[in-house]
Length: 171
Image (cartoon, rainbow, N blue to C red):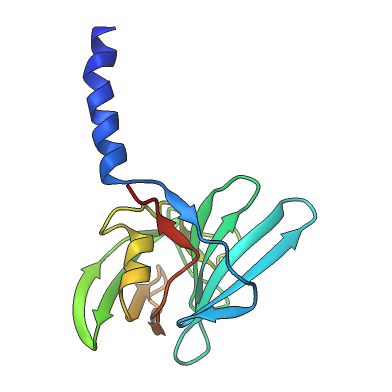
């Protein structure tokens, strides 16, 4: 019981710092800033809500996907390569976020690779001020550079004004 009383305040603080992400239900097939919103149905896995943005060269795309059945969300990045060489199932990406045309923030997250080696992604989107989904909602432009295990360097730029379908719960 004593240990539970020590852990409980930490859980309360964690919840206060990172409130859960909520789905902002929207009209399908409409743009919200640069983000295109759609709904997809899979016979086996149910409905999915998707916020998608294409790269400025229209080769790559990134999207935020939420399963309506499980309420789990993930980020996916497709850089346009037919095969991404990855050792140990993940790859470090370099990301630069811009606001009003000026560099504002750099991050170097690890992204996991799909089984077909075409999609990089992450499931921890977070909801706090500097968590990933909020960065997508706050900034105007994002550059992503990846260097795969075979040495291929890919850099893509995305205009990301507007918001994804996920937002933090207001306190």
